[in-house]
Image (cartoon, rainbow, N blue to C red; front, side):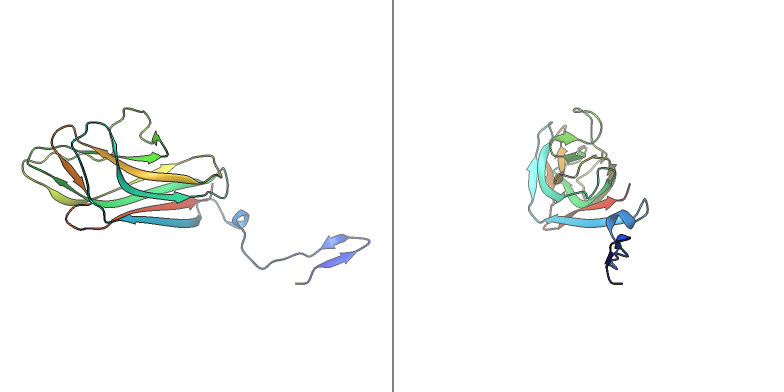
Length: 161
């Protein structure tokens, strides 16, 4: 539809035919960003270390939420090992406390090589570029992240608030 400008009504009937972010209902997916890694990272640290898996997203509104999803493989060196995995936004552990253990824990009687996945919803209240990452630690033994030549993925979805 054309734009009309008149002395009595001012600017009238402006339509772009595009769906704007503000037109999307709450819960709509506004954008999707994915990162991947094929780099293997090992640690025996009892503090969280960077896995090399991250992605950056810039929310369009401070009311948006970010759904973080990750799929990756882990390899424990010998049986009876535990591991912890956490999502981070910048330097902030999203588990709610700086010392919080991650959402993933496994205790197995033998060596374990397996695919893991997890999700978390974040409310960053920001329109700045945000980097989300996956970090991991081991209370005992060595853990390898992205093992055996696999590909790890992190997906970020902006959800309209």
